[in-house]
Image (cartoon, rainbow, N blue to C red; front, side):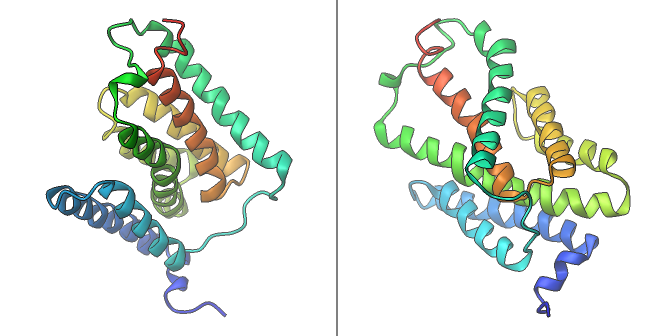
Length: 207
């Protein structure tokens, strides 16, 4: 029997409201953390919000877990990241690319934790679980993909088109591969990992 809190999962209206509310609350926590000078405030805020959401809004298992599945998720992310390298990354000049020596070690570590772990989990839970499933139940998968991908892309200043493209693929994986939040986060995180490594090492030293 599902408890009252978890029963909200099955209402598309409540799922969308929960997603929007979570975004607002998380934003407020990040602002407060930054104002207080807390290192890694974004990581802490997204982690806390994610933990609350997975308790309130559980979801099906998704695809069967196993070594082959995890490798497939990782390689899917790497393949998508390689598209970024081919379309965008390869065009970066030496002046636009970054060097490892240009960053503090702690900043690099926090950046990787956020980009490859906490942000993918947080974004997949809100965008492609709560918002996507809520809108999908009222419309259809394609329209829901367009709407949530637009929402996802807008905050990604400077890479709006790329973010929209990636979100559409992740929505497709949600529908066609039945990936749950954890599984999509592996794909999402590996995309971010490849892009960060490319950017921080001047294209793996090629540029």
